[in-house]
Image (tube, rainbow over all chains, first blue to last red; front, top):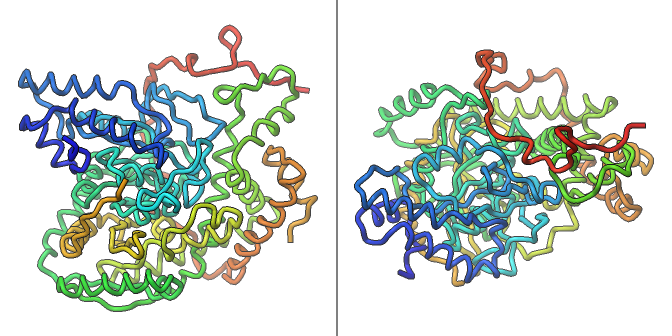
Length: 485
Length: 90
């Protein structure tokens, strides 16, 4: 049974349904593996103590011949900024270190409705702010491929737990690359869906206009399956789109199936990349050419404003969203009684981690009265410019590709003292968040044992196109290796 | 350029207490970050309309009460009887 953790969604669901193994055996195999190897990785913050009991319930249902959900028995890791009822949701912050939500996020409810089992809550940069998962109050998460290296972020626990086979699939959230960056660094598949396709109800907000919840899996098929489960209109999130908008679009796309797919390689995103990374992307382009895709280089000039626009908007929204944390209703122990109002709040909020404090302050700065026009308003203009230019490109190309991250995974601690250097690694991923389009990161190769990922972007609502092309790519390149742990 | 006084003011506005040491490191780091954001200044304000999404924000949901039946009292840490307990107002 030692091979059970390697299975993908289909392997698990069919194995359980056909009686090859029970849900209890499968979930135990994951928990055993966590027990054995998570000391080295630190992907989990909290384990779900009732996971085994839920597995037993599924086994009973199957034994009785009762129907079970389409995800029955799979073990899911949930990023710890997504609310789970009766299961601590900390945002990897001291400020929420004891918070137990009274409700489930919509995405969690949808997964549980299909009989998926939550294995546990996984690590992230505090409040999802970071690109390496080094900014967690609960300690950093290590890269399963080389534990001296960062695993990417902010959904580092989500990607590392899947790569290290400690869960079947996981959920992350992506504000500026937080699903795709760690997916790239850990050699797994991660999707940032079109803005509005997945409900954010129960996702603890950092930057509402940019972030989406999305799946991370061992392969494209798993990601597609989880995406179709969690997406859809939600009464509790008014930014979700009507289901028929997406379905209509997917239906329309089927008729294009025989058309030659056109890919544009964004020059600006390759020019600045590490030589090993760009080499890998050019050989990926050859893979697409061999698949009979039409490929050429193209240009996205507004790229140069993307990061400045992103960090202005993200920090501005963060400063507003995080204003609510006062440590009064849920937080760490510090009796409010002896303090004056403002003194208490300033004191407790000093307990945010460095990166969160910096972003709140920068956000406060760009929104302050004298600077609003100089930063925030211009950032919104830049955002429009990027979206308009991308829309133009999608008239010509079906897909746009680049590396997911311009650099290889780097050593732990290497960039932690230089926030701006750290921000620069998000340059390829923020485009999709600023413009609301979907993007996926797929494993494309290795250099000295360190993973490289390719990013594929499509126009809004074109997830099907992303999945179909990614699946073809995945099949051709056939990376079937696992980290040695 | 951000001055130490400006940073002190920002820390007050965002209600985040900083240590002397933090003032020093943050000042350098934030100056670099904001310096990078200055790139946005190259864009002319009239050039482009503002960002819009597929969904119009004005598409509001029906104004209907949706019951929330969980015990919220249970998650509140600082309380006295049925009230939330906070710091004093001066």
